[in-house]
Every structure is written in C-alpha cells, then in structure tokens.
Length: 219
Ligand code: PMT
Image: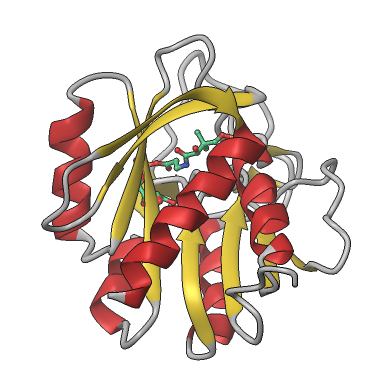
C-alpha cells in the first residue's frame, strides 16, 4: 500500500524571492530561485497532500497536481497565504521575503537626473512571525538563511517567530542555499536536539524535512 500520511491535508508552501517594485521596470529582489520551495511542493504532493504553492518564479515547472498561486511582492505573498492559512495543516516559508520595500512605487519610469539619488525603504510585515502569532493547529516551518552564527540566529527565529521548526541553511557554503541544486541544513525545533542533514539534492532535503515534521506533528 502507498504511504500517504498527508492525504486530505493542505500544505501551503512559499517559494522564490519577492520582487519589490521601484517603478514599472525596476525592482529590488534577491537570489532565491524557488528550487527549495518547489522541491518541498513535490515531496508534499508525493506524501498525498493537497499542495498550494505560492511562488514568485516565472520559470520553474509546477509539479503535477500542485495548485500554483503566482505573486510578486511580499504583500501579495502575505495576502495569498492568508487566503489559505485557516485550512492549512502545514505552512512552509521557503521563500526569501524582502525585509524592506520602497516607500512608494512610481507609476512612471523614474528619469535620471542628479548625481546621487536616495531610495527610501519601509519595513515589510514579517509574514512568518504574523502566522506564528495567529496559528492554532497549523505546523509552521520557517527557514533561516544565514552566513554566520547559524545556530544562534536560527534559535532566535524559532522563538521570536513562534515557529514549530526552523530549517537553517548556511548560505555562505558553495553547495548550499540560494539558486543551488543541493542544500545542507540544520533543523531546529523546541526542546529537541538540532538535526543536521549533510549536503544532498534539494529534493532529498525536502523529503527529510517533511519526514521530521511528520514525527513531530504526531506528538
Ligand atoms: O529558492 P532557492 O534558490 O532554492 O534557495 C533556497 C533558500 C536559500 C531561499 C531557502 O532555503 C531559504 O533559506 N529561504 C528563506 C530565506 C530567508 O528569507 O530567510 P530569512 O532568514 O531572511 O527569513 C527567516 C524566515 O522568515 C523565512 O522563512 C522567511 O520566509 C520568513 N520571512 C522573512 C521576512 C519577512 N518579511 N517575512 C517572512 O515570512
């Protein structure tokens, strides 16, 4: 018999870097490709879940049977999650959400003038922390992309954002993090020893993250 532990459960996954508009032709973004999120969507589908993938990627192929919601900005991503959150059993924030956005979006292309120009940025809502403050039974998984003090920052995010799990990747490593096909992560959960997953494909990492989440959800 097939092993479908997530049958009849909704899993909401975010993927990719948000694009924060400056004007109609310019934006601020980051190096996230969406690969980690798409691997998670694929793995969750294979475990029988009803998967909603909220993504900024315009190039990755949506896994068969996965519902795609295309977004661009952090605000749009937040709205899309809000529409799904109540029904979700698991929410996974694999997206690299911009911490700031331009204070306003110019509706016409900005013309060049002075030698210097200043762009004022305002803080985006922390989606994961907001979900953490609103959750009931949802199992909330966040990521932490760090270049140093990985454990300290990851433990801080676990607490501050009230997540059930933080998956930390050391993105200074050449085989981990943004836009790579492989990753190496440490999984942090409250009252548990950290679990280290050595370098392997993002697909294999995704499968292991869900396997660990399933053991913790049963408790
Ligand atoms: O997409 P790939 O190219 O495959 O790369 C994968 C990845 C490196 C993007 C992924 O593994 C990863 O680490 N994603 C999280 C990146 C990130 O934004 O990390 P952070 O440490 O800045 O944020 C911590 C957590 O809070 C993340 O779950 C993030 O989604 C969430 N967040 C952050 C800011 C914000 N305003 N709202 C949020 O919800």
